[in-house]
Structure formats: C-alpha cells, structure tokens
Image (cartoon, rainbow, N blue to C red):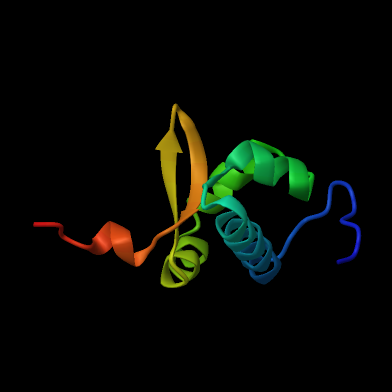
Amino acid sequence: MKHLKKNIYYSREDFIRHISTITLGRFAYDGSPVSFLEVAAYLDVSPDSLRMRKRDANVMKTLEAAGIKVKKIKGINHYYLTTEEENTLII
C-alpha cells in the first residue's frame, strides 16, 4: 500500500475503499470496531471530516450495503461490521 499524503482530499470512492479496508481488517484481526479517531489518524484527516462524510447519504448507503455501520461507543463514533449473529433471534 502506498504512503498516504498529508492533507489529501479523498474522493467518495477512495474514502469508501479505505473505510472498508480498515473496518474489515480490524474485524479480521480481533473482531472489534474501529473508532473515528483511529481512522482519522490513519487517513491523516480530522475526525470532523469523518463526521461530515457520515452525513453523506451515498457514502453511508454504500458502506451499509457492505455491512459496515456507525455506532457510538462511550460517546465516540465507531465503524463496525454487522454480523449474522447480531441479526439472529435467540429463543
């Protein structure tokens, strides 16, 4: 993977690709969600820019189609991968 440049503006497609890769990688590694702060540090952007992208319906629609959603954990937004276990009703 090439080194990311400082203060780079990501296109919608590049942003979705990076978020998907980071979220899937973290899930494969230890099954945990990844915080906006961690993603912002990796992409070298501000957490505010991630919050603005969260408001972009096209970005979120594409991520949700891939099973990636956003939830707050202890007041911080996290990207997480939805799994079949979350949608299973246990009786």
